[in-house]
Length: 452
Ligand code: PHE
Image (cartoon, rainbow, N blue to C red; front, side, top):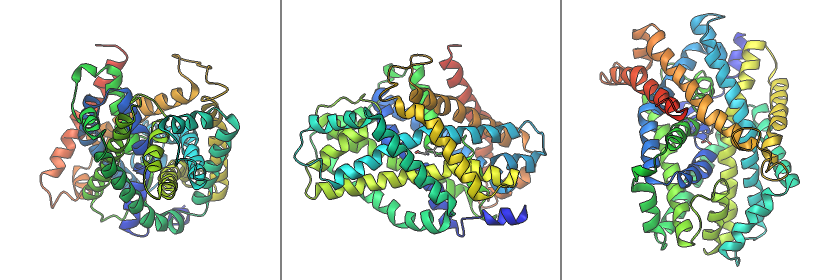
């Protein structure tokens, strides 16, 4: 076991860890999902609730997940076993994380696959010279073809598998150092371009002028769920990554950095996208196609547009990849640590299963578009709602309850947080974790199921 544990300690440096964890957090959630659910939920008020959830619920829970992983020194399930003993009900929290990260991988690969298709489209110079309407229609053409969608979904799962197979340090860690900053710069470029366009005022207005009349129970749940989704919480991911942490690292400043970067990327993407939406007279509530239908329009009008579009979609695919490897790693680490399996066998098995389980989601945009087994939702939407609205928030709720109330050893927690240097930090963190985060999650969930 000790050897295996040494074998999975990928992050040689603290920097490597920040990259990995930020890579996990920053992904399709920021660039694809945040803008489209903001559009569907009417903008400003939704954004405000989302930001509130990030600060008072997400950040403290992220610190708790890192603590649990670092202290447990094992995968998401094993860390609870290490802390509470085998058979403790808390191990279920780890299990929930393993299940949730597996399910999210299954449908995440579908959307990530689209970004690969857009890499090819932009390399072939598909966008320049086309009208906004034509670019819009390209997306429909892609998702209505089951063959194309499944091909790219498989391609993406295979890419994820190949990285997790080879260990993460040499591949993703090295590339992240170059690609994440480039992604960030391109987003800033898109943002500036958007702010100079005629849609800028409307975009700022839409995102930052709250209209609380539009806050439905659904919007509250979406905002909360997305805070977990975007920070990769309640999914066992940050517990698993935390278990690779150096014992002395300053969890608070690491978590703050990851959270700030993640939020910044989401806001920049949102503003960039909505300025195009409003300038081109598109529909903010267009749904999952939003980023694919809008960003190419900006590039089509820029010098070197094809090249920039190409770089953008490569980076989007890369951002998705650095998130998907963290999803796969949760189950793989579980099989390695708890079942004594090899990395190769675990990775192939989980990768293949995730592909198969993802097929109904891939078909939800074409041949099974009319198949709505529950609540009038397609498989894709059901999977998304299941993990984002329920499994992640519930996982996070139990992490908060565990770390806030049940995990004894105050001194230990305080020291682990580096509390000696910041006297205010531990009590504040504890308060948020004990009272604020659990009540927020519970209120929003109960509100959604119509208790109030
Ligand atoms: N945080 C990732 C994103 O925003 C998604 C993710 C969820 C990753 C859960 C890992 C676990 O795209």
